[in-house]
Image (tube, rainbow, N blue to C red; front, side, top):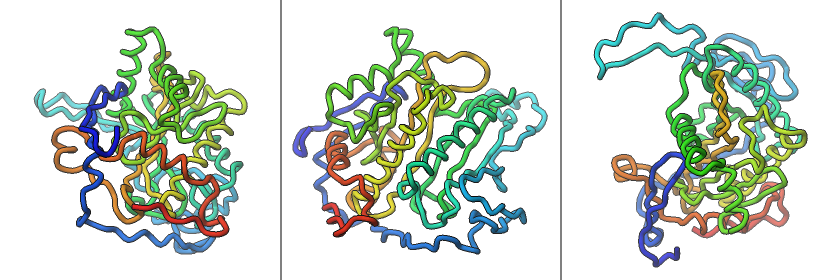
Length: 354
């Protein structure tokens, strides 16, 4: 699709929904909100940061002087380990069953000033190792149905603390999006006798239109059905249901691809790129899920520059998701930037045009 081509609907088989692609709208003038890029200059250690080594958190707990990855129970969890006693539904339209779970925080590094793309490859691999251990240990609990590992990066995404960290919410029930993807994967397997994401990874590898970067174990691409302007999907080449099934060497390959994608993000507009990131993998309630396929979503809001973002409002909220920038153009722009972080480049990289 070119800038002048007409609108097109694209199908998302994971969620069984459509996205409207309208490339002609990319040329419209912008007189809306402009958000100045956040100042990301920070000290290596901030004594007032609740997540830094040795700091006292809001709960009164004191962090150890950790030197690597640090995981602890969230001081303000959305889920508690013990749910209240179930009660009979008031009415079929007023159902509110109790929900139990565990919420944890994972600090990626003791360094207050380093985001994920600026960590060393070994440091990112250590994060992947911690994710894997948490998935295994939390998923082994009899009352946990799904383990959601995610990161909200940047104030624009509602991150309450700039220290590099993510979260892990392990819930009794399966979250909405995970359940919808699981249904899409299962239905495709029943209809076609193969894994949806295995087939899609092979298709994208052959076409080369939307690939951002790749290695022997993983592909990073802008999915055909992407909603966010520079959305990317990271998918394992081999059929792995979860982090726990990764073969030797694959955790390092996952760390490599995550680091390369986020460096490209930062380099696109020469800013610490905001995003929500999440890993989707097999549910953990005991049943086998041969259709499950490990993958990760990056959902970043920036649209034209470091100061202009995409808003999902109006038609997107009330009717159908819509995007202006085609997936192919977004992938091309991400491929064009360096994998050397702009903060380390010499001379400085030229900013991307709006």
